[in-house]
Image (cartoon, rainbow, N blue to C red):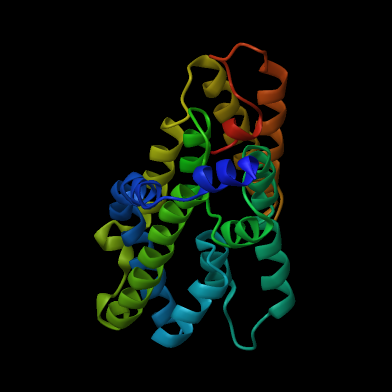
Amino acid sequence: MKSNQNKSAVNAGPNEFLLGVTTFFPLVFAATPIGLLFGALAAQKGMSPLEVLLMGSFVFAGGSQFLALDLWADPLPWLTIAFSTFLINLRHVLMSASLAPKLGHWTTLQRYLGFFILADEVWALSEQRAMKQHTTFSFYLGVGLTLFITWQVATVAGSLIGAVMGDPSRYGLDFAFTALFICLVMGFWQGRKTGVVLAASGLAAVLTHKFVPGAWYIIAGAIVGVIAAAIQYDDNPNGLKNSAEALQS
């Protein structure tokens, strides 16, 4: 009985939810341009605002949604899109494996709901929280739902103005992805070890992208980043917490 009460105390609380919302809120200004960009590009590919909303709600994976748009053609290459998006989303296996050991106090239903809204930003902020204290379900939900709502609103808005926007890159929206991930990476910066992981991961991704067609560069960068982190791992609490936490690149 006492264990259940403790579990409930760890997972519940409006203050934790609001903390999740406010923790993510600064990233709204980085995620919104990315959503506007996606919506504008989707509109130029002939997708309606409703189709954009449904895609964002059921897929909810910005990288794979952009990749699917890039491959969009008539007739639609279903198998190519499915395989390419599968590759680009394999990083979710690493992210969920990284978070899972820290979520022992979550119920099974909470895990299913939580991992449905797992995204790079949600993972990064949850990992940073886990380094200091429990990542409660309420906190995670505050982060994830704020991103989810921001993404849907921004992509639909982008699809509505996309027809008159023209080339989105002239507004600098194409750099929003890069800016956002730089912010996330710096949240994990712990000196030379992190730099080595980022350099190894980035180099592997660039070389794979140059010589291997498809989205294999994402997997290559992830694997090399994990290996570089594992080689440098020690039990010092000031070092890298684990290989997955140093993966973001």
